[in-house]
Image (cartoon, rainbow, N blue to C red; front, side):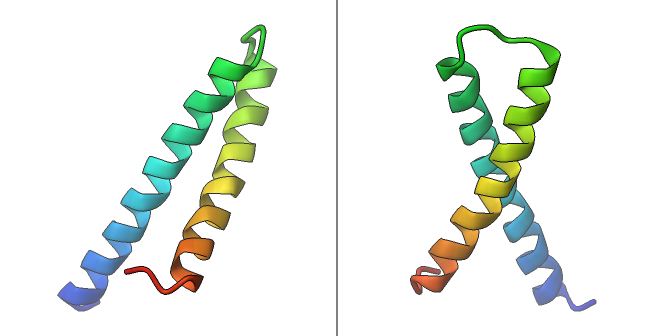
Length: 63
């Protein structure tokens, strides 16, 4: 793997992690009671939304 590709992969991972953290935090703030199942469901939904947010941002032509 070239250095440029490695940097691109790390940047994509960092962006996904940032989206996931923000969306999971928002989920936890908006639900009334936090239990294990709610946390797992929220985390998985936030992960799917993070992929969608990244794809949407890339499709819009932003760097």
